[in-house]
Amino acid sequence: MSADAHHDDLAPSHGTRKSYITGFLMSVVLTAIPFYLVMSGVLSNLATSLIVIALAVIQIFVHMIYFLHMDAKSEGGWNLMALIFTVVLVVITLTGSIWVMYHLVNNMMPVSVHDMSQMP
Image 1 (cartoon, rainbow, N blue to C red):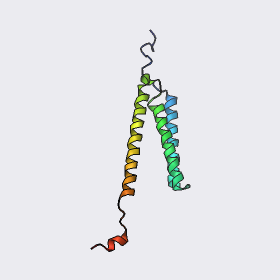
Image 2: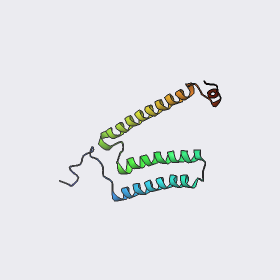
Image 3: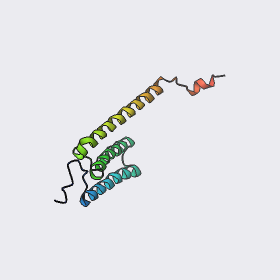
Image 4: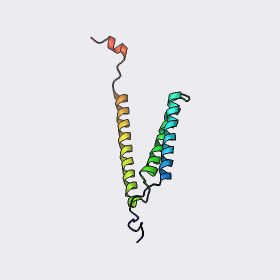
């Protein structure tokens, strides 16, 4: 009986030292770039924000692949299904919250400084 005989297709995969080092280095780079952009102020606020968000999304995938070992094959695809379900719930929650806050701001009666001076 071989050493890998007890492993089946549903068993979680384990990374190698090389994959962990690769994931770590990618995470460091994906953290250092936004840090430099924010601290130096070389770009506009909007450009910096968009780059930071994009690199954060990339870093999420780096962590999922290199450290959590998530792919379409792990645990028969159930990890991927749970991730998709979580992403859908987060998108619904964030979209609904932003929509409600936007409509609250736009539908509230504005109070200006000039109106306050005429109050008793």
